[in-house]
Image (cartoon, rainbow, N blue to C red; front, side, top):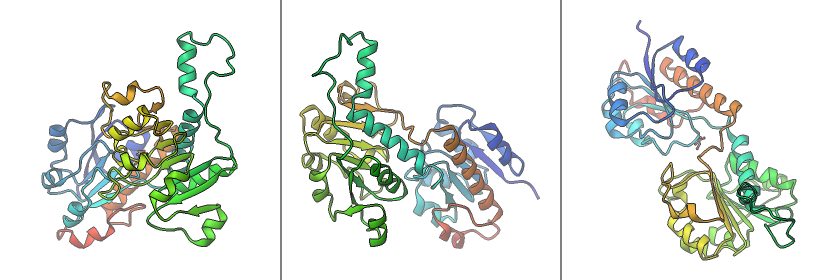
Amino acid sequence: MERPKVYVTRRLFPEVVQRLAQECRVKAWESDLPVPRPTLLQEARDCDGLLTLITERVDAELLEACPRLRVVSNMAVGYDNIDIPEATRRGILVGHTPRVLTKTTADFAWALLMAAARLVVRGDRDVRAGRWRTWEPMGWLGQDVHGATLGIVGLGQIGLEMAKRATGFDMRVLYYDVIRRSTEEEARYRLEFVPTLEALLPRCDFVSIHTPLTPQTYHLIGAPQLRLMKPTAILVNTSRGKVVDQKALYEALRDGFIWAAALDVTEEEPISPDDPLLTLPNCIITPHIASASFATRRAMANLAVDNLLAGLKGEPMPACVNPEAVQYRRPGG
Ligand code: DGY
């Protein structure tokens, strides 16, 4: 039987792609920049599987253009770039990469929180620009992290790791989520559930966002929410840019409604170099790198390959978003 054909949409770790190539005919977009849409449409046409990234829009147009497609394996925990109902309807299984990036992402959210609170980026810029003249008792003053109140919006796996790290800083941890944790978990991790976002925000010194992007979480943090926050508060976002209304955030930072923000994700990625947010000294922006450690990115690529291979063989995928899609598969598909 002919080996399945797969398309990999970016340059990845060679040994991981090699594993895929042992069982499949592999073609890859060997670049560090996203594959152009017309190329993707053309290359994916006769593929049985795709290994995609968050930069690829997997929508009805793409799925329609690939009549043989059986599995889309996204190398990310988030899958808001994929039209899941459309894939399911067509019997196409979708894989993602949860768990392997949880701690690395929480570590990075903490790095952003600390950097924003204690002016790490601004301090470094000032040193390089020759603005470090002396030890200034009134210079580079930040916000204390220890003993402060951290609010977590969306307490999934990453949110929980965020909370665990807060205990070492003697912080009080509040959380808001549509699903409440068990009383046992709340006690074990010293979490306080707050039933509404509006009740959570005014109580926090730091707010860290960990929700997926869905129609319900689009612009979850907008002008009204930002105005509920303390003027000394810091917003950290490592989830998806569109969860925060970026224009409203710019105005809130400019007008002092909140003290600072640290974003690993923006509404458009990459953010335009002309974006007004980049003019603000109290906003840190990193290029969507929260999961970017050597070990974690390798683990994500491996899990994406495991998902793809299992799905193509008709075996249970280690992490499948829509296992119910199998019932919609075409006969022989
Ligand atoms: C994800 O996995 O969804 C991230 O945003 C990329 O690490």
